Length: 102
Image (cartoon, rainbow, N blue to C red):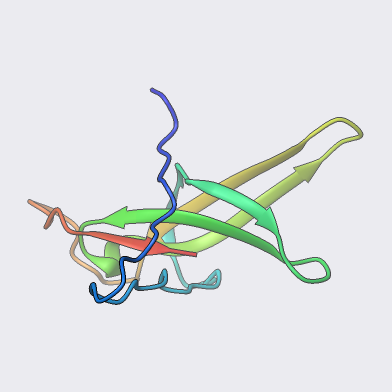
């Protein structure tokens, strides 16, 4: 499956305001972690890594649990791990609304 990418959004004068992605930090309470695709990653300040990703479905079923980083002399491998809040009911149909996260 090809990676999911997005194009930059350039606001038009007089148009609706451009929203910025929601911000999330890894939460150790997330359970049932699974790897998830992300749109892009970039270096932040100091040792910070900024990862842009999109979730669909209930937010409590797509909680950021971990960002795993493995670095060698030739590459940096990033694995984004999403999970659910303990006690969240993530069975059955999920709404198909998307939220941009970073």
